[in-house]
Image (cartoon, rainbow, N blue to C red):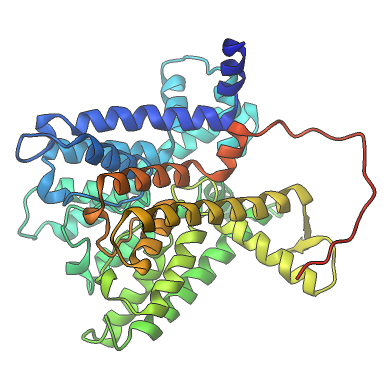
Length: 448
């Protein structure tokens, strides 16, 4: 009976993904516990190692130790590899190596890949190769630009710094080899634009990128059949709106606060960069603990939304948020069907969007309650940290390093849950959706 139950559990896509992440988190933690991983040669403690490994593999960026000072170059390489694996996705990386050595994937693994990449069984190989190639090409370009720009800097190994930050940015991880993140480069247009574009590229998603590239390829061929699909339109629309809106809000709320000493040009650069990085990447060019209350509030919303489906980003995803807005908009228009871009959104998709948002918010609130009980910290700091951890963002007011051992474990779990996603957890523990042959009479309930 146990064997049958375990077999049913492991064939679920969510279980396959969740188990893979846990295994690699454990491997990464033990690597960070080695004496060679830290500067002092003592290795990382068990709790801190699991926290850091989870933060890197779940591309979060929260840290309990000062990354450039505490960890050795070996430790930095371990974190770099974990970020790369987490950004690509464990299943994508496994599929690539399986293809490389000519090994066939198991049915359960193919199902997981189909769910993760939203593609057909026959297109998994092509999609995986596109993801790997495009990732390395974009990261390489970013690393080259940063290397040339940092070649005159005082720190050693600027090439490694460039590779590390390029991977961290594209994977939306937010880990930095500078103790104050990118605050020293707050007015540096090259660093801000390069890191910003890498974050956007990783946050758009591997489902969107082929459609955009295919559209422009056919544009040059003057093919009349070229088109941008609805998912891509939604992602690009929401991403553009959130970046512009976030920059305007940051400039407005912080103009006389953290931006007070900047020139107008630098204020604009910082505002756009923080708008881009807030939703999932976690880099910062200002002191997060000094932000105004309105900025904290909209940061929490942006971290909750996150990036796009099938990307390196976290959060409930831009598509989910767009569908929820569309539901409300169509309700005010008196329409039962949810219509966007002259297309009708399937009712099942609407249910998933509402479920994901509800489960996500409920999960964060439960963890906030626990953290408020276990930690001696302000309400604002705990709430901000919890949303940052679940959204795999990595922005922090400084609470991470002050967490108790229990608090670190709780935040570690929250990062893991936030990366795997409520939908994947529902696939693990939920039953298979089946069409019911019996339909009960409808009943009206009073709401609102």
